[in-house]
Length: 464
Figure 1 (tube, rainbow, N blue to C red):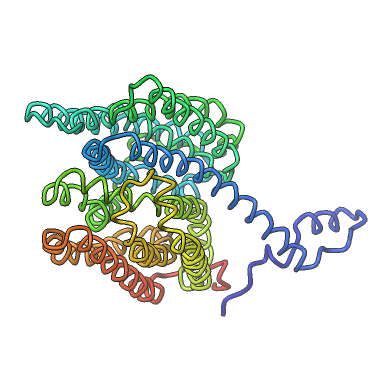
Figure 2 (cartoon, rainbow, N blue to C red; figure 1 turned 60 degrees about the horizontal axis):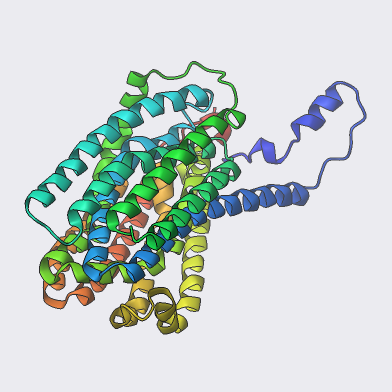
C-alpha cells in the first residue's frame, strides 16, 4: 500500500525545534501549506509564461511585421527558412535541451553548475554542424538562381541559428533550479533589441528575410551572454562531482537518439507543409500558410514554457513515487492545456476578420476562414502535452516516437496528396487528423507503461 509523502505531513523545522527543546509554534494547517505551495507554483508558472510570452511575442511581431512589409514571395521564403531552422532546433532539443530538463532534476541535480559547463561544450559542437548544413543550403539556393529571397533567408538562418540556440540554452538553465524570473528578464531584453532593430531596419529601407534573421542573431547572442553572467546567482554550488563531457554526452545520446527520432516525426506533420506548398502552389502560398499559423503562436509558445516548467517536476514525481501514481498529474496538465486552448480560440474566432485586417493591413484575408479549423487542430495538439510530459519524465522518448510515427504516417499518406489536390484545405485537415491521432496513441502508451514500469524509489512507496 502506498504511503503518503512525509513532506506533506511533517514540517522538518518544527521537528528540529522540538528535538532541541525550543518553543514550537503550532504547525501550519495542511490547507495553509497547500495554499502556499499553490501560490509558489502560480508565481513560477506566471513567470514562465511571461518569459515564453516575450519570446513568442517577439517572434509573433516579427512574423506580422514581415508579412506587412515584405512581398508574399519573400515572406514565403522567410517562412520556409524558418521551417528549416525548426528542424535543426528539434535536433538540438533532442540531444541537449530536453535531456537537460530531465537530468537536471534527477541524475545531475547536485552538480548543476558543472553540468551547464559541459552542456556549453556540447552546444558548440552541435551548432557548428548546423551552420555548415544551412550555409551549404544557402549556397546551393544561390547557385540555382532563386530570386525570391530564399538564398538570403537561408544565409540568415545559418548565422542566427547558433546564437538563438545559445540563448535558448541559457534561458532553460534558469529552469534547472526553478527560477524563471531571470529568464524572463533575458526574454524582455531580447524582445526590445529585436523588435526595435526591426523597426529601424524598416525605416532605413533595409528590411528583408536576411536582415530579420541577422537582428535575431544579434539580440540572441547579446542576451545569451548577459544570462550567462547571471547564472551563478541562481544555480547552487555543486555538491556532487559534475559529469565529464563524455559521460554527459553518453547519457544525452542514450536519451536523445529516441528524442531525435521523435523530433523528425514531429516536424513532418507540422512543418513539412511549407516546402510542400511552395513546391505545389508557389512561395506565396507558403506565406499564406505562415500568416494563418501565426495566430496560434502565442498559445503554442505559452504551452512550451509550461512544459519546460513541468518537466523537471514531473521527473521528480515519477522518480520518487513511480509513474503509476502520476495519473492525476497527467489529467491536470491535459485539462489545463485544453481549457487554455478553448478559451484562447473562443476569444479569437469571432474576431478573425478584424484581427486579420489589423495584423496584416488587409493582406491574406482569403485565408481568414481557416481559423476555426486551425483552432481544432491546435486544441488536439494541446491535449497531447499531458501524456507527452510524463513519458519524457520517465525517460521514455521512444514511446513518444511511436505516437508521432502514426501522426507522420498519416501526414505522408493523407497530407501530401491532400495538399497537392486541395492546397491549404488539405494542409489544415491533415494537421487535425495528425494531432488527434498523436494524442490518442500517447494516452494509450502511457496507460500501458504505467502498468509495466517499476517504482524507481520503493522506499518512498512504503515498500521494503
